[in-house]
Image: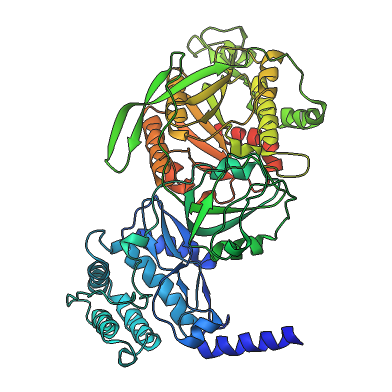
Length: 602
């Protein structure tokens, strides 16, 4: 009975406080692609993805009932930075679904044109003026949104004098975006303006979450949470265990983290996400423990200093594209190539042999075919038809009475570059990980190309910041595929991160030395470019895109095969519309890879 009364009380306070129901909620996920298209069409950076942003505490004045109901203490404001266009994941501020959807569209457009310089009001007014002048079709939607926003905002007559002055200035700026407005600081921050972008101080930082991908790869089940949250690094206590000693009377005045041995309780993903929503900044650290269930989140945190030392062995120095400065930084990355020398020779696993026989039959069409050329002046045998025709026609000139047999040779070289980062440690079933299907794919791919007699090479790559990019050599172009190479493939292991641009540049240099008429650079990956320094988000995407453009200038043909289900957000910008494919079921990768090669080279 007490629970039921509490529920009724909460529902009543929520209605009185004005919190909306779910009937008119406009969600970001169904329109994510359309909003991204609108953003880019109006001049937004093409390399940015569309992310959900987490709500932050705004500190504006709330009524007593709103405080009792616990509503309207946080707000999600739109922003754009070097990584992504960030929009609220759900909008329910206005009474109708149409208005809430229009707000998402308006914010996407405003992010595309609003200048970076200037104060909060000036930036948003400038962006609004650009949209109203250049894109008049948005004007009617804007004025409907302004009317709804003014109705939602607090009445200046009921606010203290300093806050009322700020509120009137904001209302003036909304009604007349061409009139400059200056906000004087009040006792409290003003009510957030939902039609405007977040203040610069709240814009998401461009630095990466350094350990996000490897940590997620260690869990057997992970739920992706699309919101972007603020985070800060925290060191784990050095003490091996035990409890903190304190006086009982201090329990309500201070607390300290105590690292003790205890059972880990699994939480539902929705519970984890709701708990994260209650925090403004997440403190994260690595305690070297894993659980069966995890929540993957996008975090904004300060970048850690590069602590990697230059490798002791000789390394290949490669450039890297800095899109922010629009220049190629020479000798910026250090790459080493290694080989698995200790691998024992092995045969193709029994579980793959039936699939290999099936692929062998299907790929037989790619073998060089015999072609018979008749009526040749010289040849291997006499062309009887031409000779008889010549004998029956006395007026005919000396005929070409020979025939030749030639083989149509395929003039093609392929370099397959496989992503061996820690993210491939992630499980796709109880029996298999991503790295397992990559290994099977390389085995079947090699068996298939050995049959077609095409020249091919196999390399894997991973990285740990720009000073330690690693490529493992599984097969060179001048090597014959054999049991020793099968053994090398069987020894591949996941390691660290995915600095894709450097690996592509070195693969390009190797493939460019081939004299074949057609040269295919095939990239096999499970995610987008990343590293545990600044090489995250747009920086890695733009560097990879530039490396691929360099490969195309040398006459190479890049193509990407990925099992990342979110790859459509970034791969069209990196590889182009028709230069990649997404394998929806990772377990199908071994079979699909060989057939895809046949389609690309037919």
